[in-house]
Image (cartoon, rainbow, N blue to C red; front, side):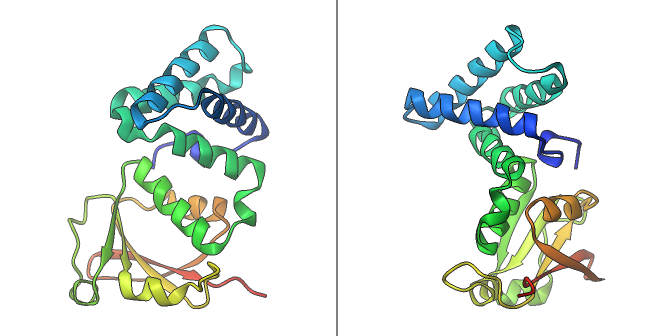
Length: 197
C-alpha cells in the first residue's frame, strides 16, 4: 500500500476533510459525476489560493491525482469522509461492523479487490491470483460474526493476496483488532477479534 493521507490522519487533515464535506453538502450535488467534478474544482481552488497549510499540499495533490486517474471510480467523497472519521476520532465510536465496512471500502478506494466467498469457494481456496491485491471474506461467517447492532461477537478470518504490509496500520486506524494466522493455500490470513468488554 502506498503512502497516502488515509494512512496518517491528523488534525489538519480532519479540518481539510470537514471543510470539503461541508462544501459538498452546501452545494447539494445530485450525482456522482457532479460531486466528483465539484471536489476536483474545490481541491484546485484550495491549492491555487493556498487555503490550507503547506504540509497539506501533498494530501491535496494525492486526492487530485486519484481523481484524475480514476475519475468517479476514485470515490473521492468516500476518501474524504474516511479521512474525517479517522482524523476526528468519530470512527472509533462506530460499531465494529461499520468500522469493518469502512476498512473494506478504504481498501477498494486504494485499488484492492474485495470478494465475498461462498462456503464452497472458501473451502476450495478460490482466489484471483497471488499477485493481485485482494481481500476474501467468507460470506456465511460474516453474517454470524456480527450482531444486528454491529458488534463482532466471534473471530472472523480474512484472507489476503498481494502486499499486506499496510493492512495492520489500516486495521489500527479502524480500531479493529486482528491476529496473524498461519498462511494457507497461498493466502495471508488475519483473524479479526471481538473487542474485550
